[in-house]
Image (cartoon, rainbow, N blue to C red; front, top):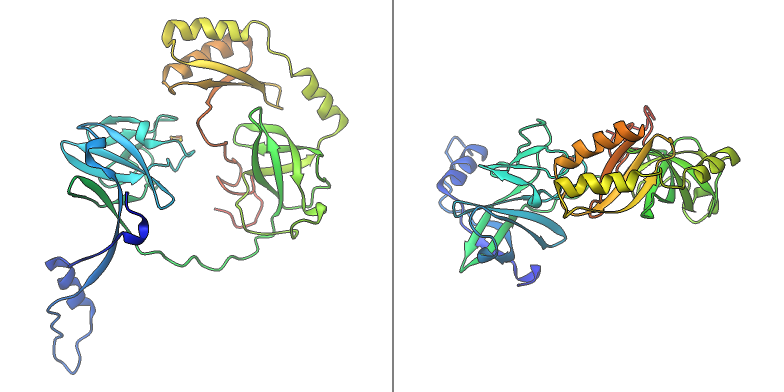
Length: 328
Ligand code: FES
């Protein structure tokens, strides 16, 4: 595959482009400007071979730091950003029906031709023009836009390790939370309350008190008290019989799914089962059956997915219900 530096090529504008330019350029001295020919610079990037995406199939390609899902609909190739805007699942492994792909995690639906989200309007994914040249797939990359200068949002940031899988992410708080390296803290993610370990805090003096370099994954609520830590200790054991019951239900539905770990969330009411395999709709039904039987909320979480994002003031916000920091 060629590198990005070899990816530039000139594409002449269509008649339509020239028409638009004639309309946009103001007349000078009453005379209409006549644009005979305009050289239009677009960048296309080679991402792989067309033969890698058979009819009716899809594939993820990685190029120039982007993950792109390419779909082959009746011999026509369509490309969209591979990352679901809901919680980041991979759209290329979703179910394709006609021009609609359903996200494998929670079922949001996207039109692979337009990138529009047809189930949750206003949440499109980026789409890319695809060209096939000598059997090679190339996508058009829009010109880079300079990001606006970053304003300090006043959120204090902490690097926290959390979850049974040891995810590491930036969390935020509006008020300073008195915690330092190695302290345990209670944090809020979209899964609920969780216990985390501080790797870096503004009080450690390694970073300025408030920086915008990373959007917080969730909110730091407080340093864990002795009672918090005692509660977590009580919850470290497997609820008796849960994994056996889960295995039996899975064997009846889908023997290819393998539960490899479990975790009690800090709320004491939610058990997360981490699994390898495909996120099938049946897992939701099995989760409901286990929840009824064991009186916990039982959720499945695929090991390949990125860490959960914050709820509260929105994905990527500081995680609070109304932090006033201006997060969208
Ligand atoms: S619908 Fe795609 S991650 Fe939830």
